[in-house]
Image (tube, rainbow, N blue to C red; front, side, top):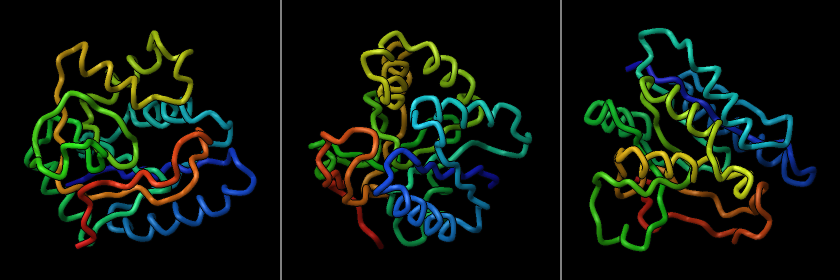
Amino acid sequence: MNIKAIIRTYNGHPELSEQRVAWAIMLQKELADLNAMVYMDLRGDPYVHFLDILEGCFELDESVAGVLHIEDDAILCNNFIEKMQAEVEQHPEHVIQFFSKFDQDATSESGFHYRFVGGVCFYIPRALIKPIHRYVLNWHDRTLNPTAWDVAIGYMMREQKMFYWLVLPNLADHRVSPSIIDCNRQQDRRSNTFKIT
């Protein structure tokens, strides 16, 4: 299965950027079989960076099923590629979320949800790249949430009655680390269900 893998990293914090880039390169090596590419935000605007990444995917080769979006502070389970591809094969027309932090996750199974949030690791089918870009670009609450492109996707899904597939236990986790885009976020934002094996 041909999936374009994108790892996003940030250059917005002089003390943390070097570590972030190192994590991104480490992920790139883990995802070598997907020819993962690292994209750095040089403008210091994660919202615009996400839009730029999507726009760069408008003319994907027809053989590409979709885009795997991963942030530099993600931790992936063992055999991630194989497990991720199995989920995409089962739900090829849906956004697939591989990380979450909902209270009910620990007692739930994989299933369809509409309350999308979090950009750590998720998949977008090619047919939804342009619609998501268009919505996120024109989101009415963007000025109130200047970095929250993932929240914009959540609004789109609720408004358009779209569901995404949430994989539980999560196949990706969030590394314990300071947030570059919001210094008020707690450093420990780990999944409630992630298992490395």
